Length: 313
Image 1 (tube, rainbow, N blue to C red):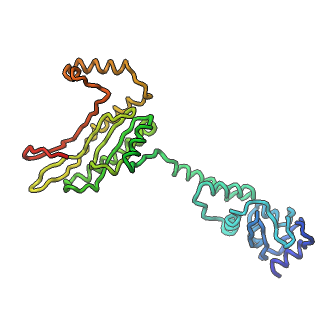
Image 2: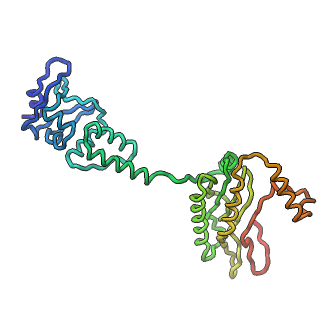
């Protein structure tokens, strides 16, 4: 006896209106039934539907009335998107959960409706794991154009630390430990970005002309720069040397934290700072030196040569 005959015998259809009846599964465990779940059509057996103590078992063991249409399809007024996954769980007691968090939530809602506690527990555990694994700590923008860099720095209300690294610059050969030092600079940038996340905007630049250079900004203006490369002369050739001035980078990073305040000129602070500088160096004060326009540029052994020749960039 086919699934169609089974349904017609138990719940004969008459007219176009859906009818309700008690589905007496009895000895029909291996017979197929036809389900219409929110417009999605499924074939399965009574044995699968009654394996676990769920609402579906109550429906197909005669304890609840079911609704059928004129063609004998049993109607379930739920979204059918995840019903196939539910059937697979009833068959095998395990499934591969969806990858996306939202879909796991949807599946869990359906499992709760059908009272499938084992599947509910699986979904809850997966949601907790996804929360622990995929919650971002911080986001680091990567500059793709000078205009983008300018926009990011001007719009930021926080101090800015930018690392420019461009290993593809192969104008000269590199010393033996240059690649290691370049990697150390990148690792230090990652550590600082995690430590000061929320207080400082960290930016990566991979399009500049320098090989490795740190820049520090406060209240929209450049405060300091630490260039980590130098040119050295070897036998009959020039080499590029990459340094790792860790202490200097830490110092300048802490200095930019002084610029976390809003962009409102503090005249008393500027006056006090200018007065202390004038006591230390009258010559700079006489030349009209303005503290706000000063940029500390630190070049770590910028040119190291054997014959004191200067190289221009």
